[in-house]
Image (cartoon, rainbow, N blue to C red; front, side, top):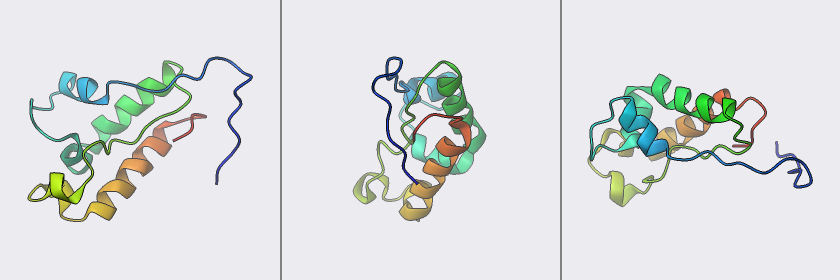
Length: 100
């Protein structure tokens, strides 16, 4: 269910640096964050929650590489619909009042 975005309110802050935040949590350099959606969903959700707590009013799902050609042969690419649905679910669970 969508709701209108209040542009007259405080500045519209988006989350940022998901990949950098996951690297800080141990994601190996060159690894795909989408694989961590399956392997370590709690870490992905925690990054979203941190962004929301810091004032982000919009959270972007962890699906930057979510294209079948990019994820071919990776765990996240085995069922791309499931991977994307999980990415959105994690962001929504952590969002508080932020939009996803």
